[in-house]
Image 1 (spheres, rainbow, N blue to C red):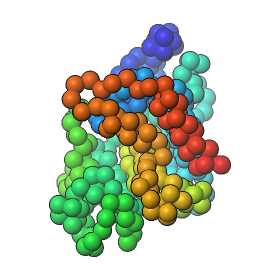
Image 2: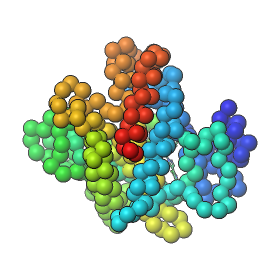
Image 3: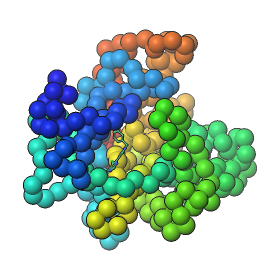
Image 4: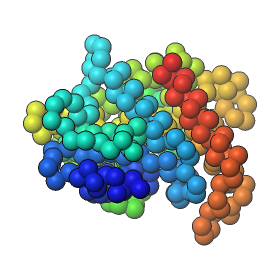
Length: 294
Ligand code: Q0Z
């Protein structure tokens, strides 16, 4: 068992999200271990069974993006721990675990949208704006925005949904200097990442970053998972351009969502996913990883 293997190496469970688990180590209080599971969620439920290899594939994608973003002219610091004297990561979880430095996290989800969809589309229909940013009239679900917008959300307490907020509200939450730094870093990273994805035939529609301050240097540092299909919406550029019914199919668990929508009335416990749905979903995650990191 995973939990036993981690405990034998001194890792104690600290926190679990729907999909990932966080561990800490008594002898290494400055570090944490982020472990991505194969769990998949849709319509706010964690489904059975998991998607074999999902945790490893999303971890590989995060690592790849961290490396891309750390290199080059506009390099971004990240929370991955490197160097000597680091604790063991059990072999059982090595391919889906990231050893990270413990940061002082900022309680803002830094969302950037290049296209209008999801909660942004819902808010737009009600107000013709998203997070206080006015938008042109007449946009449809999935339309490209005139330019990418920063639409932060406040990290709600456990179990509650994050709440879209204005930039001004983030100033109240973290101060003017940090609020501006979060926005500027988020937009700059999105610009780099979406250009890179586009070159590989993938549209990065939107994504969510989380940042913290490095406690030793004070540097703003990219944390959490980055640009995975759990934290981002990726679309197939060819399907999008063709404009057919699948043009906004997300590059990951759309198959799960579609199957569930057709086989469940959204009350009670969701049904078990058939093997074919699981296999096809795993193949989608594999395809995204292969395309992006090609
Ligand atoms: C991330 C989360 C979960 C994974 C706390 N480097 C860091 N320093 C301090 N805190 C965090 C990180 Cl990544 C941190 N989360 C979200 C929850 C699994 C990530 F269950 N919470």
